[in-house]
Image 1: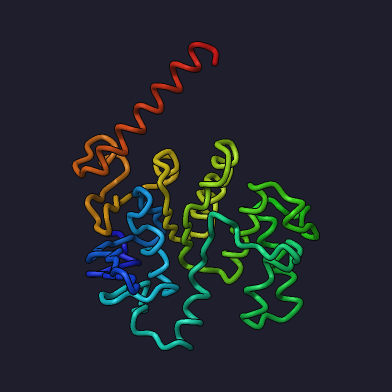
Image 2 (image 1 turned 90 degrees about the vertical axis):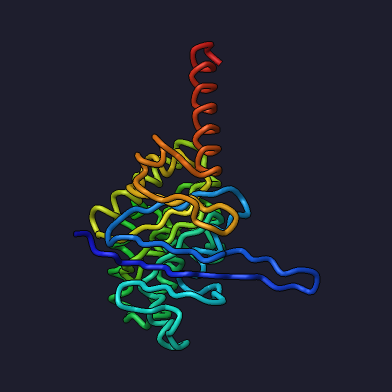
Length: 263
């Protein structure tokens, strides 16, 4: 039996303002097994990014529990949380790199915070850059890199502290299709080589279909459907699931027609 590594129970999150209160997460329940590549898909505003940011408590949930491994994230003190966050890597759509720092300095940044010795830091950065295929860019600056290369630096930085979990928040949304595939291939390779559990937050069904084993659909702050990727694609039963599959099928048919007409 596969080990449940991440378990979310009755998770709620509301954003408060002077004009209105917006309930973004409405009792999320989810189980993710160790070593899985798990996709969470939903339209804009469904609560995807809020959910993933609650996992490492970049957003504080109002109530509910989040267990990652043996740690109950919602009960950790600030000091304990800072230690635990080292085991949770995160990559972003906008890369979040320091433009004034080299590739080496960007990847070394979390290691510096973890108080690595200089020699250890140098060895670790070289090791990770080799893994993501950027050994030759170690002294380059982000402005000298393509979008795909910037995202690889972001992935390398997320891997710096040997995390158990990698959170990908729309990490391929700003990339062209060819670069998206290369980044997804890299994530798949990382999962296979290192056994890291990956959570892929996206609105791109092709990314889910290409890389994920299991998936959940988030609709207006609620999980409306979950299962294997094959199950959901072949027989969606939620409104969002059916709509996503319909749009996905229509888009593919349009591509086939355009390719057949030589467009």
